[in-house]
Image 1: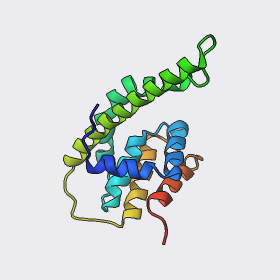
Image 2 (image 1 turned 90 degrees about the vertical axis):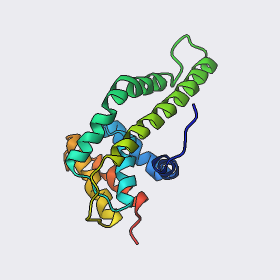
Image 3 (image 1 turned 60 degrees about the vertical axis):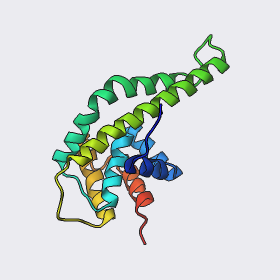
Amino acid sequence: MRRAPNAFWRFSLATYGDPKVAAACLALQDLCGADVNLLLYCCWLGQSGRALDKRALRAALRAVAELQSNIIRPLRQSRRALRPAPRGMPKAWAKELKDRLATAEIDLEYIEQRLLLAAAKRLTPTKRKVAPRAAIAATLSKYLTLLKVPVAHPGRRHADALLDACCPVA
């Protein structure tokens, strides 16, 4: 599958390449049910001073809900189930299948990002820009609230780690 470059995809590849970002995103995915692409979307828009309100976040969630629930999550579960190799399956086969599923998962993540990019283009322009760190913090907090993650939940500290990785405190 050919992935045409776009600003969001380039940002995601560069940002997720930071081990701290990847660890924070995966922890939020596993502990809180967060969508890694939505986390990156919050950060990408926040980098430009754009804080999303709950309406815009709900629209983004709706834009990717079917793809996430029907295809990406089941595929991820299947890929993870191959680690370690299921009983009776040669390890080499499990590894090959796991690698092929990982490639398909990345293709699907790219498709999801295209849906989010389209959602970003539909956003009403905002006259009020805020500092990138404040925009990302506000949007990540709203996203976790929509996911019903309590303020005292340990997963919230991973959002702080994501924020720190994207916008280090000077």
